[in-house]
Amino acid sequence: MTKLPLHIAIIMDGNGRWAQKRSLPRNAGHRAGVKAIERTLDACIKFNIKYVTFYAFSTENWKREKSEINGIFNLLRDYLKENPEYFKEKGISVRHIGEISPFPQDLKDELLKIEKSTNKNNSLIMTLALNYGGRDEIVRAVNAIIKKDKKEITYKDIEKNLDTSFLPEPDLVIRTSGENRLSNFMMLQIAYSELYFPKVLWPDFDEKQLKKALKVYSKRERRFGGTK
Image (cartoon, rainbow, N blue to C red; front, side, top):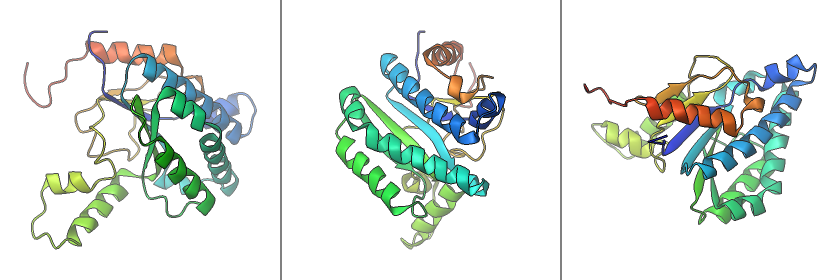
């Protein structure tokens, strides 16, 4: 692999189908998906990837059954509580994008606590997209600019007010499970990202699958609208 992405963004799709294939409840698929996050973080560090963003809970996910939503919140809460030493050992800084105000207070507290305790780690920045939607993010950014009494808005203004202002744009977007959609994820930021849609369900994603994605990325020529 002659070139590697600086920032990988991942749409983790297929937890429910993974569970259904095994006659398990959907939340069992989400639990297996957390293990895939851990494997992916280890692999990203091995391949010297500096930024990875996981689409963990979208603005549309509120339409799911309440029991499933609560199960996701419980998994996230447990994951953050159980892994501070892991984040420290691996040098992982935890961040989030999205509007988390509707989340349970104890979950918000846990997230902000882990962000504060890991903010000086610099091996890899892991960003969790929580109650995140690309369209919602753009609306919030524009409203923030309007409050500053800007008369004329430029793209740079919008970019500086996006949730992702602290991140470089993703070089590679991976969506698992074989679905070829972006599902309202980073609509502005991935304008020139390379897209990769493996058929593997997210709970089965591992270092081998990531290496396949990196090999595909390495062979592509990024042009950014220009010619060869």
